[in-house]
Image 1: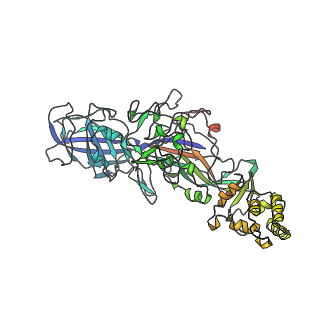
Image 2: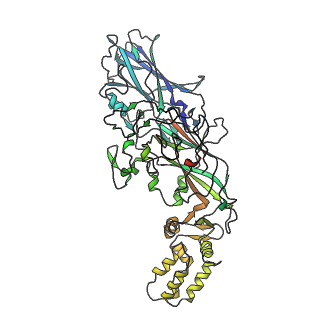
Image 3: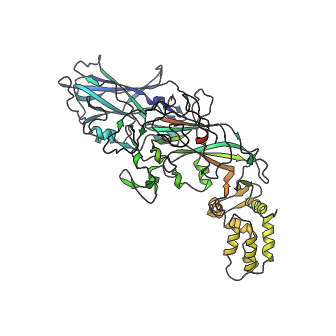
Length: 599
């Protein structure tokens, strides 16, 4: 499997900021920053933003560390989703001598832009937007600036008065979604402008002051590519074929992201104190391209093994105490995952076809998620984000199995069975197991005889135990539960001779019951579907024995692309331990070479 991680090329949304002096009234709710030490005086100015989204296509490759990953890719505009659209923006202006990491008390002035025009026919760009001109009464001097595109309708920005409030703002909503269509991706400054914005009385409409600011999306995207089908490489299932039919994101983080990206050498740095934190800093690497800095989300240092206890509520999200599960989209937290394969069949969807990027692959979008990072010591399925693949596993030569209908089948200790009755017959050397049970029950003259019969059975389904423990009242043959009745009423299984086994009848969780009764050895493959999991990698440290800095992580404005190149064996009946063997098959970290990992 190839796993690619690279930048969205809209990352560098270039914003040309122009301030033009003019004589007109100022909005009553506009606040002014302090004197910036520049030319004396002040004047009403007009502020206008121009957004240019770059259009150069990047390459896909091994998940390399560092700020630029494995290249870049332009934002998509397909199937009702527009990753490049900008409908509004907010600019925060503050003292030009103060860096983004400066004193938290530094006053800021927020200017809102709500009318944007998309230009057409602009060579070299995916899209270019120009805002309306907004008046602002500002002192002359130098200004630093932070820009937020698509800030949403909540007007959270209007209550922010200082620099600390901007950079420490935590936002949960990073895009709009309507019936599977996505837009209004929240974007924020990716770096400080190279030069401060310098305002003087010479800034006229013909000679405006200008500054360029880069912004990046706060969302990350997960894509996958799969072949039409794969030949199973496991000799135990010779001739079987596998088809990837869908995927879903697990541990999909949604507690929130800092408005501004921050990095540090230590994942446990105290965010309240802020020492050691670099705001808008780059992800750096060593001489071997191995990541050396952590990207921090608001809860990175608190994601510990102790805090994963779901009986504890150590995290605070929007003023509410939550457990580890509360950091993630409901239903996606892996440690609390459903044990019903019918649920997973619904969760895993085919994905949305993405635009062709020239590599001949059929990429599908699984979805979007927020930044999610841990220290290397706390890398684990209890926190890190992954992708679950759903596949149809079609066995070859399985007696009683219809390849065209792809019915439910079962696996006990690795051996496949088309039906539970067929499995019990094979384990007990009785070709017609249901009839055999009925005949043996008729021979019983007491509950003791029933117990003796039950003790003879080789049984992972719980039937023998049921016969021993359900002996109420006086014995009669009719009081003994037959195999077929047990199958229907206790396991929720109806064996349709035309369409195969139907599970979960009568509100039973068939898979859960069988898994428990068999000592976790009997698995239920609903509609011939199995599951594989891949934990999304942000940076490869090329060491099979340890987890590296940012090795398994999600970072804003990155696209995590997983290309399934081969599948070795049967997956789990629900997502479990059938993972990609990444530690075995990760290739050496080379500049633009793919990471090939069989599933």
